[in-house]
Length: 287
Image (tube, rainbow, N blue to C red; front, side, top):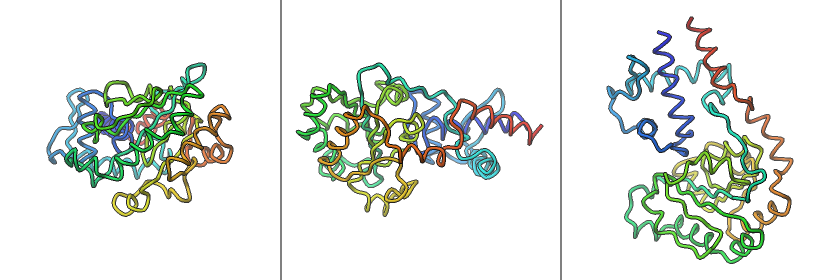
């Protein structure tokens, strides 16, 4: 029984910790691709999603035990139990400054043609941002690299994005480890990606670029109320985003106090013992 529970634990940890509460941080391995497919509900009920030794876990069992363990342990250990199983280190200090721009996907643009994608507001807004004169001037002036890392669901469209910015890198999915980009960045810009929690966890500033908030809330829905509970600056236009980037650059990418104060309320544990706490609680309940 203990081994079966631990197998479920590993499975859930992969799907939420590695995939990132919404497949934001999919690792470039076969096992994580399977975890991603679990998260996206592409498996059959009797599909084997993971194995620990000779113990296998079916997709049906995964779903059952995911909700069981979530309800059993979140009240005890907090909502952080599946995240930050690996040390999240800040590697930005003493390095050339990098900003991570990581937008998430849109359900209404899944598997559309390239032509349709290029006609979307999503594409037009990010193309406008990547080529905005004020942003390009700021990056050049302060010698900051902006890493644009598109969501894996949109990986096939990365070649459609173009920019003349010398300090902007368009990074194809899988070409660089996402965890390294997160640890190296001095600041993260996103719309609704849950990967932003990893940056917030490190005490770095985050900015939410929400040009389609109303539609996104209607169609997909966000994990927090972006208008009331965002733990970073909220902007809606490329002009305002460029201004906020310069503001943080001038202040040495120091997080604003009002957002730093939210960390203790939103993240119960900030250490490297989340896996240990989860394991000990499982053993305590199922000796």
